Image (spheres, rainbow, N blue to C red):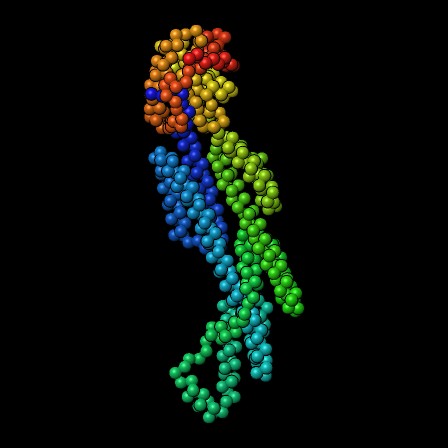
Length: 452
């Protein structure tokens, strides 16, 4: 047996709402993941089907009433999509770097072969030279550049062999017996030169910034890189390189912060819509902030949206808890008059009376600002037979057990966080101006404690 209690009520309605919000966030996270990763060419149909299958399984859990499972697994799936997006972005950056290196080396090798062909072959094929010139200026795709490089190398090899005497050719054949000719890839590898790791870092970060969608910022970095390559003074070159690397890292951090804020706002929007919060004006502000990449505006909007969501969730949850408690007490025979639910919101407490227990009632307090309620038996008159107080508390304790079972049967959870034994503290007395009028909306009790 126990007396006054602090309890926490978690209703089925709250569980459903949380599961719905989780599914709404997951759908939006999945959409964002698929859009970004597909744009980076880092997503296969098989991966998409696997994620969709897990999402559909969660929806099946929801239909089966496994609401807590939906909420927990939905959060884990969203975390996976976020981390997978980062991994795929890094893979896209590496792919971009490889392509960039191929383009750069192709242009350099084409320019080199133009010079060699002109030096070694007086009547070099003009069409080949023109094509190599286009390759050197970056006008051709990589596979065409490689074809031209192979053609030029073959021409140079043929020209070199033609200049040898018969004896020299015979000796060259003997020396090369059992050896293969140098391939294009081997030749390209032999021409690789040292790249400053700072420059490589700047290029990698620039590629990532571009993938994030900040193409103007990435272009500005590339412009500074080109200016850097024209700097002859070694000391100045080093200082400018360090400065550009620091600026580029800071820019990446800023872009990632903005993208994180956008991601949080996007998921929050889905949750607000699922919670049926009016977001029309807020969404217009979001569009403006997204377009301007304004970090401060995004932070403000996120805080506003989170506040609106918390208020809506709290209000709905409080209403659901009141509804569950009032329904349970009604089933147990307590007098629950119309308007009492509203009184609990306004005054933070309600007094319920049972017909077969005159002079006593049950006080339910709290539940407006948090999910905790205080429930206890109270006396309705100071001029009573105080020897009945223990009996009144005992009866309420038995009814509380029944209330808890009734809530559980409806899918609600009631947990006890704190309780005192029966008789541990004197019953508080709640006196009303009109003892029979328990419907008064303004409840201002005079609290008296029983004398020991």
